[in-house]
Image (cartoon, rainbow, N blue to C red; front, side, top):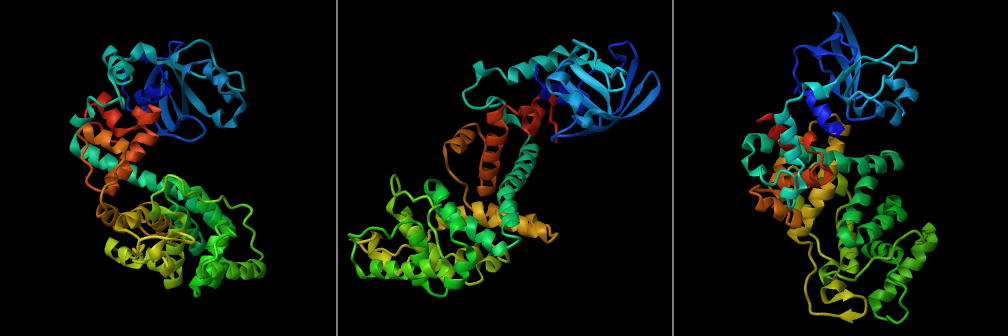
Length: 429
């Protein structure tokens, strides 16, 4: 038995509602189960119940055992002073308020059908699954319910990404351009150099980037130098020497300190993703677009965004992937696939937060953009596809990743519209 099942039963009244009595044989009528609280505090707010004809309004707390009240230290928390009913699976002790009056208790075990318990146990039976708990049933879920839930999940994923946006916004004193620069540089590093590029963005203040972006060589030298890529004394080509000279001047002028920057990695990367190429592309993007944040948040289509990010690394990199070592000549342009990742992980989360800051409904613009981007591809998504879940766009793939990470992998099936529907029959959150 788990608390999430008790919450599910109470929230959706999946119990015998007639002839309910408390553990002290008082008649109990549920008038309003209240509002489910998913944060700290009692499980349900503003509930209404009748006990022996007396109307009570307040909060309801649920536990597997009554004694969990003390295991969770609720007796020390004033947020639980207004609990009017304690709903438990097993009543193993009486719980008292601070004024020594007993909190009425409902023992749910007496009012639940065997069918509900068997369905619940089957959902979490690990012997029958290889991937997720509902893998044998998910393909039969109502299409409308599934699509509606995926849409909600994508918004939830945006809200999750908004946490970092808001933290950076607070740290920068509401400098949206600085926040966008930090997140964009972070995601230019992809998975392997994400932390390195993030540390670089936090060490190279955007106020300095603003001053350097009109001069590509200076901006590149700041990025390369701060990233620790200009320390090789054996390289003597002209471009490298110019970068080192510029960086020494800029470092002194702006009192730069690269101590807190993680050195980027080249290992296990395809050459187009080398940090040298990505940093040059990033510098070129900012040197060519002095109002990048403003351009991005006002773009209405993927076509506009692709046009903004249509940049290449500097000329030196046409026949180099690393300093001092020539390679076959190729223009190092940002690919559509790479820009898609920037849109998914940087542009849309920032746009979502910015529009919210302005009091504007952003989903009308965000959904057409995310739905026009090709779905992502990884092992998790392939497994969902194998279960019969059709992913049509990046919006779907982002939603499914949120589903897996926030619900499936944590066994939070009863907080998921799919899991709830399997216990409740075509249920909608």
